[in-house]
Image (cartoon, rainbow, N blue to C red; front, side, top):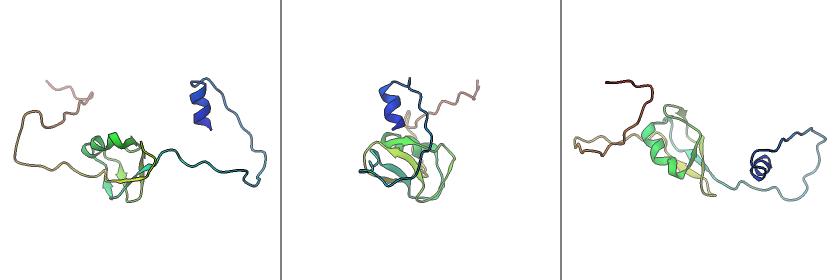
Length: 112
């Protein structure tokens, strides 16, 4: 409900609530509109894998975060849950081509 109110008021609403009492459920409970991205591997999430998976949804983990099998690592853009592998490393080859590797801009790096 919070998300709907903030969206409808463009973030201008202020919500406040107090607990009143426990009661029986009344009516149907709405399900999730989006599925989740579930890790199917143990290890550390890496930048290459997260970069290739970002089109599938919003990621909750960052580069080098420890993940485990069954961990929810993101929210899916679709309504179904999706198993993914955020630990997949880029396959290395002896072939070199110009422009085939994606470059990562590091604002901390001050090289010459």
